[in-house]
Image 1: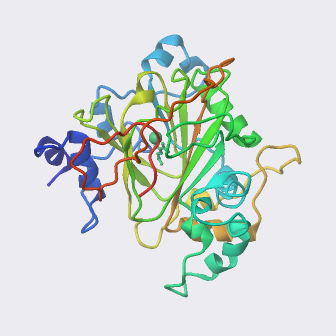
Image 2 (image 1 turned 180 degrees about the vertical axis):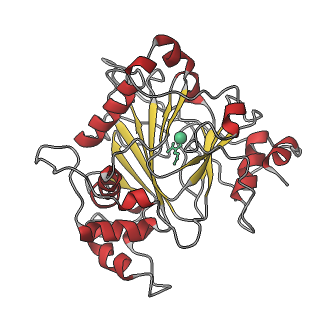
Image 3 (image 1 turned 90 degrees about the vertical axis):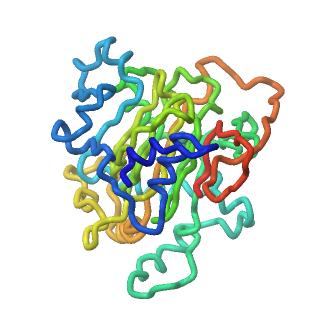
Length: 359
Ligand code: OGA
Ligand code: MN
């Protein structure tokens, strides 16, 4: 069965999004990926047939008002210079899981146990490969990290009480990307980092917990390729499937800011080439001490590349408050319900607003 057929045959109680999500999530045998858009093959492929998609060079002249308002969802195929991805991967694996940031392991482990995740894991990860079936290291058990205003998965809110300094270099990157897409003055205030294994997925959801929806949501992907589904404002709207490869950026702005989306699967890497060759490249120029991007040592990169052989890391960066806005003094906690999990057999209509948690 093709993806198109899958989406068109909607069973009772099901919707087009869920149908396609299940189509790509199936684990028995790899699904047919032929309907998935590959933006890194510009112009050659079927995506030009989609009237909704238009290719555009990202430079100052492309940023006229017409383009900015027309483009809601912006996909930028790996804009990173050689070597730059290594820096961000190292930040995600070695630096951002450190305190005072919050991670899934903090939910059931003491702060002493979740200290030095990188140090406690690195040698085992480097030596793996040859030794199969070892207990998982802390780094391999990492599923999410929150930055800045730490997202509360239960109340689905951010609050002024749960705030730690947002990493400056990630703010600078986000500010630059947003400005390049026509959004000047973007403030990176909250980050959710998701860590995917080969069999992970991220349920169908809308990110609406931020108080200002006029600001874009930025997404950065590294490591293994994922299928990303972008739907409409209704679950019945059939989603568009696209590959997200290492280095790819997505900007959800305008009308796309509040659309349903999900990551149904990680795409099995072709054997013998688990990582794209550009990830192996080192920075081409000498770095200065005050450069944002620093080079990654060979030993650190060895750990990162071993980890990424089977994993994907995604950073989403959000501005939570409008400029000058503050949190309402009393926050009314909404009903707490996690994102859709495919295994959840609940017949009830689930509340899928708010960020989703990796399954
Ligand atoms: C999210 C999200 C998508 C991804 O964290 O809200 O939608 O590509 N992530 O992991
Ligand atoms: Mn999301």
